Structure formats: structure tokens, C-alpha cells
Image (cartoon, rainbow, N blue to C red; front, side, top):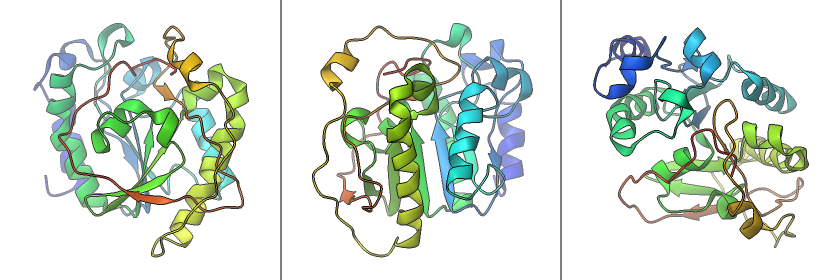
Length: 246
């Protein structure tokens, strides 16, 4: 896999897990091969499977709006997913499926070498911080294996709960600040809780187009996000994010 084109070709012909049996199209990912920002979601939804492109449905439209709000667009970033084929009936991807796709995502990260990786939802967060709650770590930059990781909600969560839009807007503004000041550690004052996370944890799972998640902390727009160090651990998948909101 010497190039992103090589990765995409292998993904489109991959039969390493059972997901290939039901796909219409594999979804390798797309964007700028030299992007400063790489977004990682969970997996393709219905529209993505039909078109072979990531984030092309309603969640993708919201993502494009958020990118525009910080002066960029999907051609300037790179967008990928944890798994490259749509799980049947939009179920959660199984650990063996995530593991089978891991080599492709690893190589994409190596080839792009982004300054910032933005995880969209719990499953992609779990790749870098196994066992962490997206609701508690959202909006906080951290260092992992020499890379800066920034967890945010999944756009589908905001589509379901419009009161989360302000949180998402703030986190995207923080993305710009992190890139501008990526060499200096920054801190943030205590934030005011916006939502009851225990209540959200107990909500039944919905099935929006792709993946979701949210956080309990509100990082002020005029303050840069903190960067934390995490302890390396096994790459374990968090549970039940595919097409779930929280």
C-alpha cells in the first residue's frame, strides 16, 4: 500500500470479513492526500454504500456546513471510517470487522500524516482511547502515539437533537485554534455542564444514517481546547455506536 490509491483499490476488492458479502460499494474514504485534518467516523450508511463515498447523506451535509464554518471544505480535509463496508441493517460493526479494516485505516493515517485527527463518535474515539466516554472527553485534544486526537460528537447526534448544535459549533471552532497553536499546550477553564449525561446514556438507540455521539462539557468558544496525554492501551472497540445517537 504505497499510496492512498493503492489502499482504495485493496478496500474495493477486500474480502477479509463478512461485510463484503452485502455491500454495494466499499467506501475507502476521500479528500486531500496531504490534509492537515483527518476525520474518522464509524462506517458507511445507506447512501454511502450506494455511492461509495463517506458522509454523503444528511449527516454529511451537516459536516460540510461545519467545515465551511471554519473556512474549509471536504476537498481540503480527509474523511474516512473505521469500517469500509456497510454492516447489514445498519448494525454495529463487530470487533473482527473493525480489526479487518484496521490495516487500511492505519495506512491511510500514515500516508496522510495529518496534524489533527478528529474522531466522530464513540467507535472512532475507542480506536485511540479504549473505554473512554465520548460525553466526557468531547472537545478536549489529547496526544496519542505522537498524534493529536480531538473527539467530537457525530453529526447524526445533532440531527436528532438540535440543542447539541451549539456544542458541535464550539468544538469545530476549537479545531481551528488547535491547528493555529498546535505546538503549545493549552488549557481551558472549567466548563458548565449543559446536559445530563447519565440520562442520555439511558436513552434507547436510534438509527440515523451513520454514527453518533455527544459530550457533557461545553468548551467556551474563546478558549483553546486542552491537550491531554493518554496511556497507550489495546485498540478495543467501544460498544454500540453504529447508527446510535448516544
